[in-house]
Image (cartoon, rainbow, N blue to C red; front, side, top):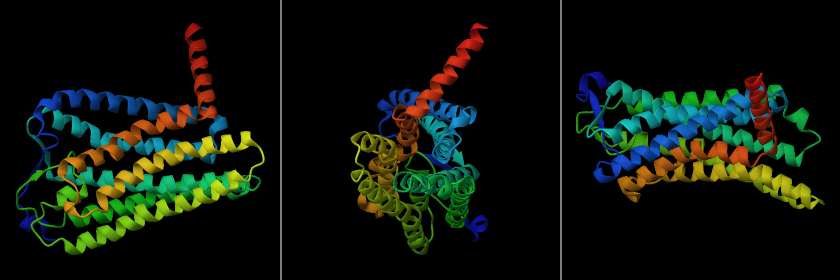
Length: 314
């Protein structure tokens, strides 16, 4: 808690992929395209769901919230990452590093809880279809969505405040793409064992518990689908859940490997690649997965496109 008296570091240096200078120009181009596609894809989902009244049901409103999280998550990480790739020495102020870590944890934590809420929504829709409008009404949806954001806020506030309560007296080079907790914590010149135990326990509660609940939901869903007499019904139910399960596996798998592994388990370069998976690929793939595999989303998108063309002609 004596950070200001003990810390001599006023800025950090993000090393990124500086070990591979010959690749930085190509990586900049690739990441810029991915970022733009991510923004366009998620923004399209947000707009389509907002404008189409038939999509104002929990399943799509959860998806809209997820797209807001993905746009925000990308906006926190990708611009700074592009700066790192475009300069030889990318610096970030102490306060800027604090803010970036805070919002990474906020949006990452919120996504964990939102994915869990979405799994519960699918479980109710498939296992209790007749009771779905009663169980998953507007009030329940609001409670789940607000709780997801509130829990993300609590996680980010507690963890970021604790990390930056440690003194930082040098070195100040973060061997990573952004100010995530593990690489920043390695630079603290104090005993961080207690915090690491807290962070490990917190990560289990934030990441593993929702993942296990999602897994349990899908086990129940699988048994319900197998009992369906119609092959068409089974195929439709599998298609509905496959997109969510794909997103969950990608996000939770790479996040678990990053935050639940001992320091020496992976090289810094491997950790950077795992970080890219949940900070860049998941926001990119979510709109593609949900839009291309969902008939209602495609119908609403085509309806919006036709309306735009009519207005343009008129």
